[in-house]
Length: 113
Length: 118
Image (cartoon, rainbow over all chains, first blue to last red; front, side):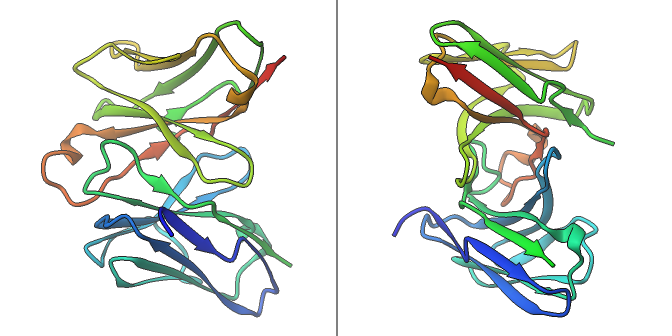
């Protein structure tokens, strides 16, 4: 499989649940990103991992916890979310600064009930 | 404070005509700009980019224009086709991110929904 793969595609969870989003890239890229897309808002950068080290955390609440066990995998662990956290969560990867564009996954549509 | 703005939430165009999508930015440090296209149920895909050393970049039916003094860029699609119907995002990054850094930091606009009617 090539490109950036995200699972699950859809997730419904209660506010007391714990779940994880998974992202996998087979492009040999050295940087991976989590973005959040809410309706009618810009894509918001949440976290950046470069060479498996977290280099950016854009004031994201602690109920979102990223993990990058190796250069190909990225997780977003979720716990005690709020309904306003419902959104499309997109993973992306790039080689270095991504001058020719990031490669995005198809996203996980998260609904918090 | 939104540093990249796409003030038109939607645009409707007839097939064969020109589509013009606009984007404004406020951060003077931005020196490299990209456009992405997103279909429903898919992630955004890279379309075209432009560096601040240029004012125009062309790739087939797609042309991006950059007006640095106005902090404005636009994407022209001509002729427009029904398959171009999608959400278009512009993004920007400081060129200082280039040259050996190991990751990027794109700032995106909120997107414009383009509908091309047959």
